[in-house]
Image (tube, rainbow, N blue to C red; front, side, top):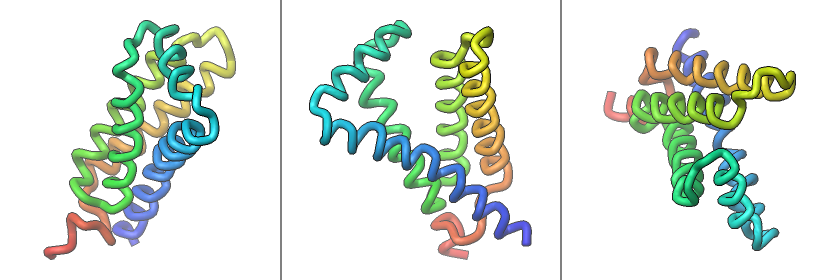
Length: 132
């Protein structure tokens, strides 16, 4: 039963960034041509250079797809955990605002889940287990 719980956790955690990566970045960029420029401006508000935009999109999409497939599960989970922690601390650090505090706590919870996946990988139904 435990191996199936790890598989389910991997899928549920991967879908968070898969949906964000594809919908919030790819789909929005296609339907709204100024979205990507606005995203770079948004990052600038937090003191991040524009180069972070493609890096963030790459981490979200690539990391989540590889986590979903279970390839290099531990590495992908650690990468996405670090990314989740980065998002929580950079974008949701205004803990005086209840909405920001909730968003920060949600990203920290996702970080915890990803760290659990990293500590218990490989999980069932993963490419990491293909040769076993």
